Length: 367
Ligand SMILES: *[C@@H]1O[C@H](CO)[C@@H](O)[C@H](O)[C@H]1NC(C)=O
Ligand SMILES: *[C@@H]1O[C@H](CO)[C@@H](O)[C@H](O)[C@H]1NC(C)=O
Ligand SMILES: *[C@@H]1O[C@H](CO)[C@@H](O)[C@H](O)[C@H]1NC(C)=O
Ligand SMILES: *[C@@H]1O[C@H](CO)[C@@H](O)[C@H](O)[C@H]1NC(C)=O
Ligand SMILES: *[C@@H]1O[C@H](CO)[C@@H](O)[C@H](O)[C@H]1NC(C)=O
Ligand SMILES: *[C@@H]1O[C@H](CO)[C@@H](O)[C@H](O)[C@H]1NC(C)=O
Ligand SMILES: [Ca+2]
Image 1: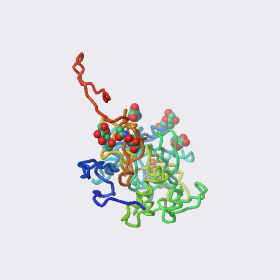
Image 2: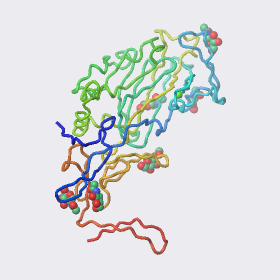
Image 3: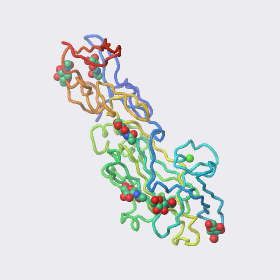
């Protein structure tokens, strides 16, 4: 089990909002160092999106689309040169409170039976930890085949997160499963689900999910009331921690909605992909050594404490290798970790360079 200090400020997702606090000890005032992490937030504000093929967005040349459920209803026009009729990728991430919805749209399945396949790659150039379900909203029927993939190394290698199909056996030779069938032991299994691909039900539910919360619930209980138990597991089980950690996501659209067993070859303008919204909630991974994450000059980075440094606070600062770096811990001091100075006493000076007048951030160690 995990022991928690009763005075830890506990916020929404159970993260501690301070990295250190002053305490009174028998020897006087001292610092108590704690695990800390930035608050979870909407991570779609900080990503880059790339499409493959790059020219797969509709509207160049302009095209008219028909509704999937009614081939005579053809009032969906896409023209990249007209703002009101363009459907660029940004519209997957804009604020969706308006009516009508705004969405990205692909070209239609003109080259049928050649597959209509699109990769949508989301990159953060920073390690982030997912804290809530990934939710995609499709505006023209959910795809009949799709794979969600993740990368943990800035897009060099990819692994599947989840497969989606109307028929898992047929599409991926996988038995269909639902997230509810997972247990603590099989939590990291990659499954194929048919839950989000069924024919015409798209009118009622347009969303495709990757269920993070249901997986958390296997440790933290149905209403996530026991986050300490989850954090205890995350703290000690690297595979589990890495499972929810990403630098990039890729949505591989493999087959659009057709709503039928046969594709109507006389009217291929009924088949295309359209996505109005993508939700990705998470926080910067700071190895439990930072309270906040900043977005500066287009770049996400942790504001490291505990004398650590690096984009993820993944190492000790220069001259602070008195103790080997390790992930911050939810366990109380002295298990709580921080990098410390190599020598004792540890004094630093900041010099003003006399020749240039500039502040010289060179740190000098003094005995
Ligand atoms: C996209 O570009 C490729 C290669 O340049 C071309 O073969 C393809 O027809 C283009 N697709 C569209 C929809 O314009
Ligand atoms: C097929 O698509 C065209 C537009 O490409 C449209 O005018 C027509 O009404 C559609 N329906 C049928 C059944 O042909
Ligand atoms: C999409 O990504 C996969 C690997 O993740 C790659 O094999 C494929 O060629 C990419 N492009 C398309 C258009 O599917
Ligand atoms: C990613 O971040 C690194 C620094 O951590 C930077 O050097 C690189 O240019 C960034 N790449 C992109 C594509 O922004
Ligand atoms: C970081 O180093 C400074 C200077 O030596 C020290 O005062 C401080 O206690 C250290 N912080 C942690 C969390 O170890
Ligand atoms: C740094 O931590 C190590 C391990 O806890 C300890 O042995 C060492 O004395 C510490 N150094 C300083 C300068 O406090
Ligand atoms: Ca939108």
